[in-house]
Each structure stands twice: as structure tokens, then as C-alpha cells.
Length: 221
Image 1 (cartoon, rainbow, N blue to C red):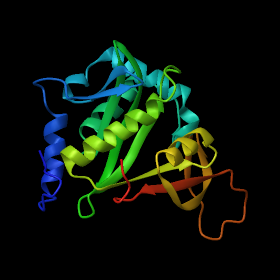
Image 2 (image 1 turned 60 degrees about the vertical axis):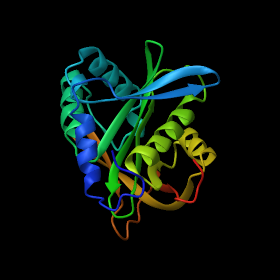
Image 3 (image 1 turned 120 degrees about the vertical axis):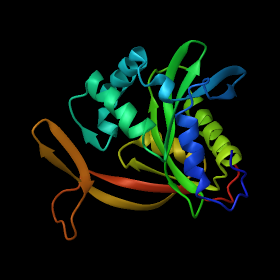
Image 4 (image 1 turned 90 degrees about the vertical axis):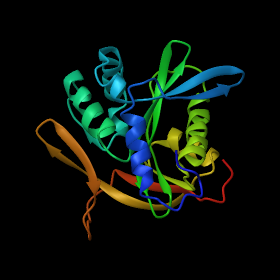
């Protein structure tokens, strides 16, 4: 594992790769929220063929599609490919399932590691089941603490939509501050919609903005 003061930043991706391709045992971050124990289960190669997990991720993706940068026809086959190609095989992405007892409640993740600055983005924050209010924030903090202790990260960033008021309120409570907003437009093609940056000089309506926030390294997590 990386030590927080390790100067060899290039080792970070090697550590992440080793974590995600581990087949020996599950990698778990233990947590406790209001006296109730829960776990953050890292998705690795061990889970790439877990059909129940893929079915669950597909259902959650359909439920919350408005909050993703692209809306399209979600299938279990497509979710399986995404899990393998865009999560497990992507060098700088980690995804954790939130599990209380035998039930999965949602997921949280880390993405786009900056090796020089030792920071990364909070990513893929999805509350799958409307249970145990407040656990999402605790899970994010738990994951960020793990990132500092195990990966040597110093700061965090994130992106969310301006109309996602619940997420904005949560991130403000966790200490994130807004640094900029980028206007977005919807680009439609066949059965897909992509939210992309509005071109320079765009004069049409803007339905929503991409809000960039950060948690600097001097913040206590």
C-alpha cells in the first residue's frame, strides 16, 4: 500500500490495479452509522460475473438516470460491460457498494486520480434504496478517510448537476465548496441524450449547469 507521504506517485495506479484485480478475498472498509455497522465493498474482478449485482446496478441506473451525464436504454448486458470496462479495467476508478447486513443500499466511488496533486473525484454516488437516512454522507466520509490513509490522497473534488438540490445540500454539509459552474445543453441522438458543455457564445436556453466543488487538503475529514 502507499504511505501518505510516499513521493513515488506512479505507484498509486499499481496499488489500485492490484486492489481491483484481487481474487483472494473481498476488500472491505468497515463503518458504523448511528451504532449500526455497515461495509463498503470494493468491486473487483471477483464481482464481474455477479448477475444479482449487475441486475441491481441496472435497476438503480434506470431509477436515477436523470442524474447521470447520459440517458439511454439501460440493459443488464450493457451494465455488465460497463462494470468490467469502465470500472474494473479503468486504471483510476474505484467503486464501493454500501452494504448493511445482507442488503445493498447504494454505491460510492473515486475517479480521475491526479497523481501529482494526490487528489481525485468523488464519483458514482447513488442511493439505491431509500433506507437508513444519512448513511450516504457517512459512507462518503468513510471512503475519503480510507483514500487518505491507504492511497495517500490529500484532497477531493466532485461534479454534480445544479438541479440536484439534495446532492448539493449533502456535499455542502460534508464541507465541499462550489468553485465554478458550466452551462450544459442536451444533445439528442436516437434513443440517447448526452448533457455536454454549451458551446462558446451559446445564446439558447440553459436547462442545468455542471457544478464543480472541492474539499481542499486542509479540511478535516
